[in-house]
Image 1 (cartoon, rainbow, N blue to C red):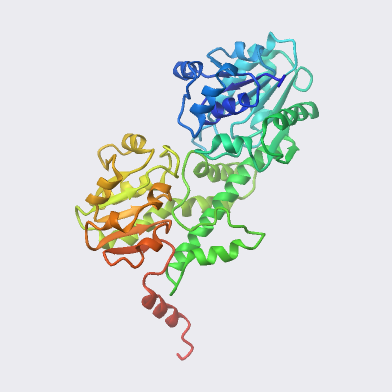
Image 2 (image 1 turned 90 degrees about the vertical axis):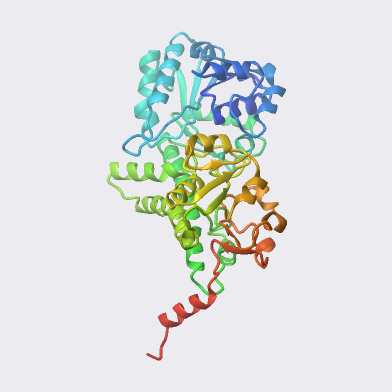
Length: 456
């Protein structure tokens, strides 16, 4: 591949993009402010934990290098992806402080470059951020004009932590917000040479692309939350079963089955903040986005709902085990994890809370401190527990069998994802409590009967 790439910001997405692009034969220069990150990549190692990243960097080591110097990277590449954090600010918007710093450094370097260069912002931002917040920095620092001397695009990725490399190389679609036709055409050509699938490319104005990115995430979280509302309703119906309901409605092509799984809510570094940000930009522009704000409010209430179900069963010093501490399987990230919130609430209720996760034990310890005991053995966790909460559908937990729960008669298992229903539903030693299913059919039937009694 003749085009040379640079990537500013070597976190999970940036480092994974660098390795993925290099795997397609291109040379990539990474830039980061963290010296340890630079040293790791130059030594052929992954600077962060992400599925397949260590191996891919090692295999393509001769085509990947990293530097602290933005100027070196810009002068030795044709296209620069900017993949820096855009944390939420006090307004609920996305802060541009790190992006502005990166654009300032890129602008300085462009001042000394004669060739055309394409700058691509990948970090999630709100409408107007790229054109009115960051472009002026590039033009001021470079002394050059966008569309004439350099190109500019906004092109966010739609990836999930734990599968970043696969998702980047095999997207459902490519989103390109282009400053001008030349910028968008060059970026589309680059993607065609990098991606492994023939994903459709949607080119549009920068502002439309900025809105489209935040809209995708907000819509997905709305779908997740709707399924969780259905799960709560099913628990109150005789024979209620959220999987039966969502399987049926998901067959409607207007709805679909993806993300339609009543369970615990979403978490992580992206989804929880996106609805808040959409609400902010809507209010700032004199519009309404109440559904996004309601989605966020319902999602944040779900751990409390689980605790309320368990409250009558938890005595002082009852040992409760939380299985799954990351916000999802295949990740060590505990940011906005509903499992972490559950652990805190149960501890405040007076329970002795213990926990286990295949990947997130260390990050959970740092987050929870002494409030929760994190164990390094799943078997040890189960042997100590009186109540078990399966909080993530990790394959490790899917593989549990009756014998793992046989130590204590009357052990309570709350299965938030219903992954052990076939194994535990009729097991006499376990009180099995699945989220999203009725476990009190007679009481639920009496409630409905009183609601619709026509003889009165």
